[in-house]
Length: 399
Image 1 (tube, rainbow, N blue to C red):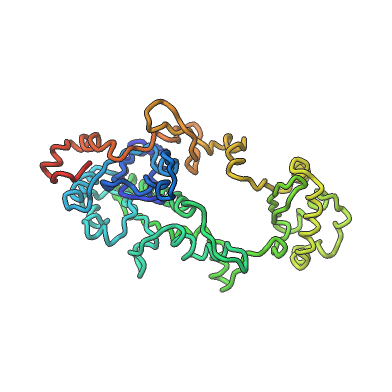
Image 2 (cartoon, rainbow, N blue to C red):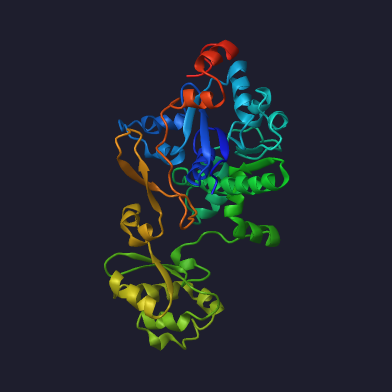
C-alpha cells in the first residue's frame, strides 16, 4: 500500500519506531537514523540484567527497516540528515522539540527544504504548553499523567505499572494513521504538513469514554470489585476446572433470561431482585454470588457451549501462552514470520501489525537491521560515498 513512500525515522525507544514498523510492514521504505551507540532498545535485555542475546522487543519495532548511524550531535551530522530529507516523503521523530530546534531539524526548517514533507513529531505531551519539552515514557505520560493508571487500579489498591510498551504501541497505531492521512493530503495538494502525536493525547483518547463522562458530569465511577459492578453480569466468572470466563451483557435486559438458562436457574427469571438493570445493580453482590455458584457446576467446555446456545457474548481469560496456541490467533493473521537477521533463511514468529489488508503484502519486509548496516547503501542512494561524507561533513559523522 505504501510502496514508494520514503520515511526517515529519527527516533529511539518504542512509540515512534513502532509507527515506523507499521509503515514498513505496509510497504514504505523506512531508514532508521541511529546515534553511533545505537537505539537504546538494542540493549533492552541487558538493561534488565539478563544474558539473553536475542532481542524480540527491538526486532518487533524495527523489522524491515534500514539502519544508518549518524552522529547528529555534530553540525555535520545534522547537515547530512537535512540532505536525506530532501527526497523523503515522511520525517518521523520522537526527539524533544527543543533539541530539534537547536539542531536545525524543526518542522519549519525541514519544510523549507522539502515542502511536500509529512513531518511527524511524537512526544510525551505535545508541542505546546509547559511540558512540551518534558521527556515522555508511556508509564508516565500515557498511563500515569492521563488518569488511565489511577482509574484502572481497583478502588483502595496501590498503583501498578502497565505492561511493556502498551501505551507506546497504542500511540504507534494512532501515529501511523495520522501519517497516512497526511500522505493522502500531500498526494492531493502537493504540500506536506506537521503531524503531532503524543503519548498523553493517545492515553486520553484510549480512556475517552470515561473522560467524556468526567467532562460532561464532572465525575466518573471508580474501578470496582467483581461484586460491586454497576452491570454485574458484565463480569468474570470461574468454571469448575478453574478457568475464568469474561461475560459481556448487551444493553438493556435482553440477556437476563438467557443467563438464567445458562446457569440452570430458570426459577430466577421473574425474581424482582434481578428483572431490571436497576434491580440487578442494587443487588449486584447477591447476583454475582448466584452466577459464581452456577458457573462452578460446569467445566470451561460445558459453560462455553451453554453460553453459545444462549447467544451470550463471552471470551476466555487467557495467558499469552494460550493466545499463542489459540487457532483464532492464526486465523486472524495476528502472528507473522520475520526473517532472521542472521541471514540463514530462518524466521521467527512476531506480532503482526494492527490492520490486515487481505490479498496484499502487508507483513514484515525483512529482519531488523544491525546498527549502521545500510549506511553505505543509503548514502549511495543520495549520490554520496563514505569518502564524500568524510570530505564534505567530516570524519566520524557516519558509522
